[in-house]
Amino acid sequence: MGKDVRESILEAAAPLIHNRGFNNTGLKEILDAANVPKGSFYFYFKSKEAFGIALVDHIARTLRQEALAFCEANPLPPLERLRRFMEDRRNRRVQAGFVGGCPIGNLALEMSDLSSAMRERLRTALSGVSAFYASALREAQERGELRPDLDPEATAAFMLDAYEGALLRMKVEKSVEPLDRCQDYLFNKLLA
Amino acid sequence: MGKDVRESILEAAAPLIHNRGFNNTGLKEILDAANVPKGSFYFYFKSKEAFGIALVDHIARTLRQEALAFCEANPLPPLERLRRFMEDRRNRRVQAGFVGGCPIGNLALEMSDLSSAMRERLRTALSGVSAFYASALREAQERGELRPDLDPEATAAFMLDAYEGALLRMKVEKSVEPLDRCQDYLFNKLLA
Image (cartoon, rainbow over all chains, first blue to last red; front, top):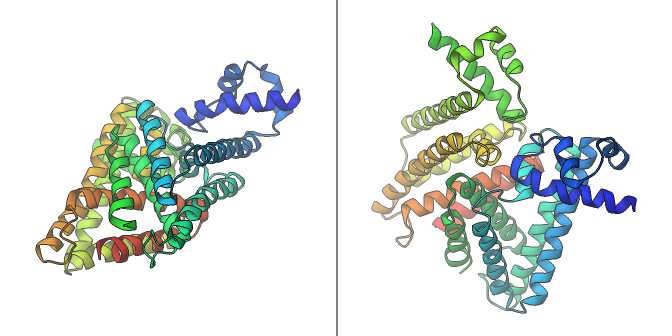
């Protein structure tokens, strides 16, 4: 029971903070959205920072589950699978009207200098996405489908960073162009 | 005189907001840092949003002046000039201990969905940096020093976005590695 309420607070908070920022979202808004009485927040989280750490883990867990589900549902050659996965994410951004962007990237820019504990969790979350990309690139290289001079880990990290930057530009331009350009440069001009 | 006070508020605010975020920095902190009496803020700016717009313009103007000064001081072939410019920025991040990152990129992620007026100015600021990169790439292409299949404008935009993403990762990892990796991938693996 306690665990369910904690989870429902995180689930209600995630979209609010995604759209409005961590410091810009008050505890009252979060608890109202979760239908939880005001006084109970500190029963579940010992501070807003502890809540922030749990939130990063919650978002990272959700992203990981979505990525694994995508891979299971799309048994494709590794590079094509990665390309389609990024296209799938792209289509969600279009549906969302280019609002929000990457919840991990947003928290990374906002909170890295303000909370070293949140920063550590954000670092782990981004490393997890990098590792997911890298495993596809390694598999592609073993199959001879990727330039042999590209290190899978470094390339994966570069791709993820480039995509985070494209999401930033998407938020500013309210256009899909930065995402499509990023996808084109990564897959057709760098990896090919 | 009025203009000087307004400018000194922006100058005092820029590093505060760079390190702590826009919504997370109060008017009192800004006015204390600028040594300006509390009541006078609304004499110079009609709202915090109007102040935010002026701040984006102030940061963009400073960046533009620094970029032009760098070009004047470094009469080099275009690609080498761009590479050295990015290295110069990299060295500043190392000196700053990987704190802060890109002041425009930070505001872009934080404010694009919260203020369409600030978003418009942030879009203009980023387009200005893109255009600065693009002019170097165009010149390089005319000299036969850049892959002829790369469009200078799109390539410049991709490079800037990739760099913004690398700065995000730098803030999370507190390491220069994402910047060096980005520089390596852009100049040695994409443009070459």
